Image 1 (cartoon, one colour):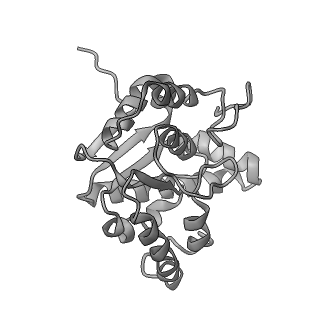
Image 2 (tube, one colour):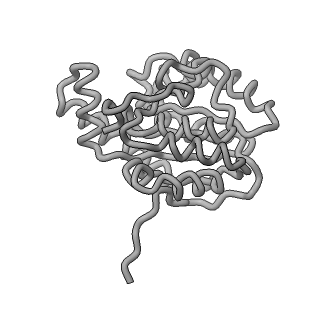
Length: 228
């Protein structure tokens, strides 16, 4: 029998209760904005202050600081970033409702913060690496093959982390989510323990449309200037 792969593949099952500490990571230009925007439309608090067009929690991102040296798990830069981030995460953890944040570079520090999350849901988003790297190259003028190397290294960090964590975790295929958005939204809500209403489901499904672009879910999108 022919079986299609899923937009969201659960690695470690999650309880039915709402996620409090929904952490979305992957690689720059790799689809994390789409997942974070869909979560926001499903009712998840993804941060009080949002980055324009990227659905990132500015409080956590500013506490994290530059990503340049965070790849060294034993380095001083990561230790300092964690010291700054942990009070912000602890404050957000006081929220009794579903909450989370998105950071494309989050695999650099996910192992260190998972214990700080009251009811974690850990999601790594994967996109065609060439497409993600090409977008980075187009937007930043970083040499294409350097951008591709960066993307592949981040995806390897995601793979290694998902292979060892025992917390509720899942992999998301950006392309599969675009092809089957209704199924993806249903899987996303189930994995995160959400109970969205019909209008929320419809809005999140419409957000996962390739020609829309996946910045702020409150923006109307950009016809013909979308995700691809």
